[in-house]
Length: 321
Image 1 (cartoon, rainbow, N blue to C red):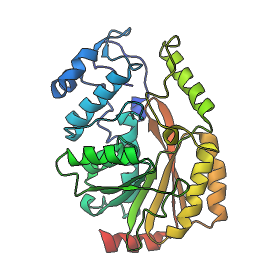
Image 2: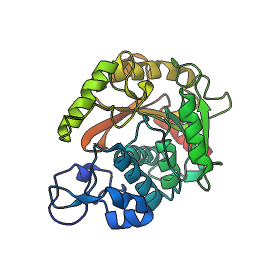
Image 3: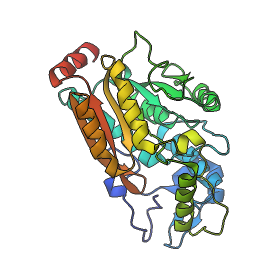
C-alpha cells in the first residue's frame, strides 16, 4: 500500500492504477487524520522514513479505510464486524474505473450518465465496498447481494447511515449459496454491469496458508495467523476455488443473457483466464474482454462477457442512456 509523499518510498505498483484512481499518489496522512482523527493514533514513521500505519494491525487498517472513505468519497459512517473482510480501497475502486471504461467503449466512446447505470454486485460483503465506491465515483445505482444475512444487515446499516445512499443501493439476500443471479435479478430488471470478487482459495487450509505468507511478508510471522484481516468462509474460499466459482457464474449467466449488458468477474490467478475464455467460446458468447489492472500491490485482471453483438449493444445504449 502507499505511504506519505515525503522521503523515500518502498516501490509500489501505484503507477499501474487507473489514471482516474484518486489513490495514484501516496496517502496524505495529514488530511486523512483531519477527516478521521482516530487514525492519528495508528500513524508512525516506517523504516523508509515515511508516515504509514502497521498494516498487520486490523484496527489500523479498518481506521485507514474509514478515513479514505470519508475524505475521498463522503462516506461519514463505515464499520464492519470483527472477522469480516476489510478490503483495500485503491484496488477495489480500480475495478470500477475500468468497468466505466468498458461502458464508455460500448457507448461509442461516451460516458453514460451515471444515474442511468444499474449495476449488480455479487457477494457485496459486510463492507458493501463496491456499491459505495461506484455510487460516489459515478453515481451508479446498485443491487448488492450476499449469501450471509449478517453481511446484508451490516451493509444496510452503512447505507442508511450515509446521506443519499438509500435510494441508490438496495441489498438482497441470496438464499441459495449455489446461485448467483437466480433469486436476485427480477423478471423486469436490466443491468448494465455485474461485478464480483470471487473467493479464490479452494479450501480453508489453502486460505490459512495464504494468510500466513502475508503475515510473514509483513514481518509478523511470530503472531497468530489471521485470515486476511478478517473474512468469512464465503469471502475467502469455496470448493474448486475461483475457477469453479466463475465457471458456474458463466453457466448461470446464460439464463439472464437478455437482461445484462456486461457480466464481469475479477480473476486473481492469471492461469485461469485461458480455461475461462475457452468455456465462454463453447457457450458461443458474443464478446469477451480481459482487462489487466492493479489490485492493491499486485497485478490483477477481470474478465467481462456479453451475449450481445456490438450492434445490439449500441441499441441497448441508445435505449438506456
